[in-house]
Amino acid sequence: MASTRTIIVTGASQGIGAGAVQAFLERGYNVVANSRHITSSDAFRESDKLALVAGNIGEIPIAAKVVETAITKFGSIDALVNNAGIFFAKPFTEFTPEDFERLSTVNLQGFLYVTQGSVKQMLKENRGGSVVSITASTVVNPIAGGLGSVPMMTKGGIEAITRSLAIEYAKQHIRFNAVAPGIVDTPMHTNESKDFLKTLSPMGTISSVRDIADALVYLTEARNITGEVLHVDGGAHQGRW
Image (cartoon, rainbow, N blue to C red; front, side, top):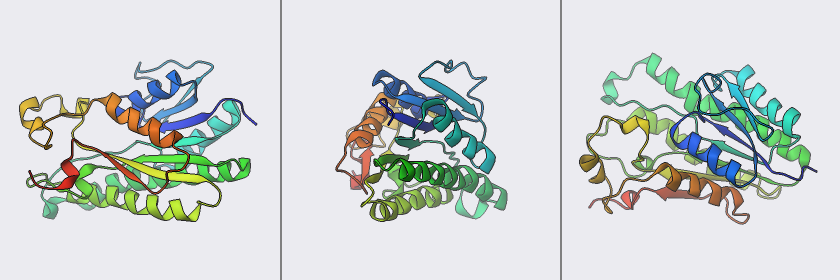
């Protein structure tokens, strides 16, 4: 049995994913970090505690390589953070089949392939495990003018399967949870007004990457929590303000 826990983090080269990698390294985990361009992004350098796997996890061979790297380099898979995802906004009637394919490939297929491979390994090791996925506050509290209906269909699907898998694997102590951020200070919002973004939560705050990383660490290590969606959004999921 591996003495150090091993975690996979997808979408790891910037923003929330990079923050998660750093947070878990600080806590002594072995980390397998994946994103399309992580080996050329200068975000991280490989070490005896960190393995980098580049590529789109919506492609089965890449997802398989991520899982296999954890097993061959570190000998186990104890936890997974499904952070990889894409978002773009437009009116519902303007989403194209190509848009839907892009969203589904990363947000749904990537989740499916990496999670299946990780759970198979966790079952083999027979000592439980944790899967935490990133969804979005706007799954349950859409914002007028947000125009994110089709991306939220994929994120809502992740919330639904999180609850289903929490029950399916409860007896094996493999836990499934999700973190639903609101507005987070990441490169996605670089060109947007901070004053405007603050109006999108009742607390008038913008979450930091560390706020989300802390939530990911908490759910990963909270051994008696499963099927939970933890909103880190300044209260935005509670409704109108």
